[in-house]
Amino acid sequence: MLSRRQAITRGASLIAALTGSASGFSDAEAGPNNIAAPGPGRRIPYGTCVPWGPLEKDPDFRGLLKTHCQQLTPEGGLIWIDLRPTRDQFNFDFPDAVLAFAEANGITMRGHTLAWYGGMPTWTKEISSAAEAERELATHIERVVARYRGKIKTWHVVNEPIDEVKGKAAGLRPSIWLQYLGDRYIDTAFRLAHQVDPSAELLLNEYNIESTDQSSAPRRQALLTLVRELLARGVPVHGVGLQGHIPGKYQIDGDGLHNFVSEIRSLGLSVHVTELDVIDDDLPGPPSVRDAIVASRAYDFLDAIFAAERPSAVITWGITDRYTWVPTWHKRRDGLINRPLPFDEYYRPKPMWSVVDYFCQKTGLAASR
Ligand code: XIL
Image (cartoon, rainbow, N blue to C red; front, top):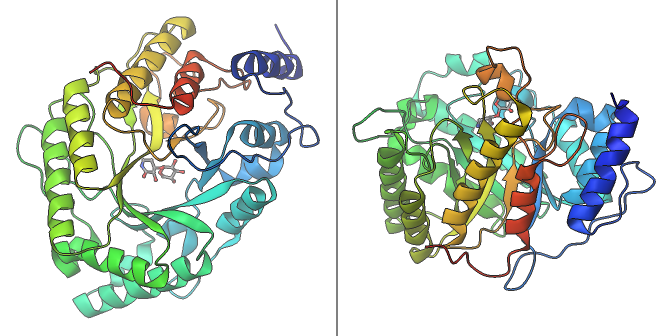
């Protein structure tokens, strides 16, 4: 059995072999990350969401971020429930800590998220009129986007706007915003964010549009319709975030995803992979088998996207299996830990990392379609 330190050291040399980078996980060893923004021939920025506790307490975790990430998204922190425990309180400590770490290491921070049905503090249940809802949304966006103006360059403005349905047309997802402001809550959120920071790239962020599960195709269609309507109304939406919480038990609908990304591209919008992980609770137990399936789902997902467009970023929702939200909702019944991410719990690279790194290095489109 390797000690954790030995495992990390071995992981570091494996990573070095894989990426050609200098190994090193300690704060002292890992240098700033100066990889340039994407463009033809440039590496696509890779990143992850970051939980606050490990960022503060785990130097090996910080080392992993410094070695591999060009972008970071606070995991929570900017969602309403974290930021605004009471109506009048804004608590910026967590996102400020991520920003300080990012800036110290030449990394860019992303913003997640301004309007979502989920992650809402209980006091928002007191909202009881359209005027009040609009006032709260406006106060929120003005305050938060202004604080990070010029620093957060990409915002997931509206998160998960499409409803969950099985086998029928999908509409907008119920939320306090939809309830009081109707479908124009999306317009309002984007217009406000754009007013406050005209230089920020503003995304619609959505999940479950890539799989062969029967709910994916109607969700894709609904998202496309929504994007077209927003553009027709002159709403400043600049791109689409594909979360990519891939349900491991389903194959990727490569053609469906490729066609979707082609459509988004033809509308002149960017595409970002914003929250990639592979939900593995229904996959076979043995780690080597599971890791192969996880990597292959990630490959099929990225390949279908890259055949249509080089995304502006590839962000995973966590970087190491040690810190992942997946067991909160998708715990395995066999008691084995979830393995949804590119590095294992000892920070050793898994096949999924080879896949992600391969695509981030790609200078052209994938040729498979
Ligand atoms: C999860 C986070 O990982 C948690 O830390 C948070 O408390 C709740 O949700 N889609 C999203 C993310 O947009 O915000 C979710 O993150 C995962 C699903």
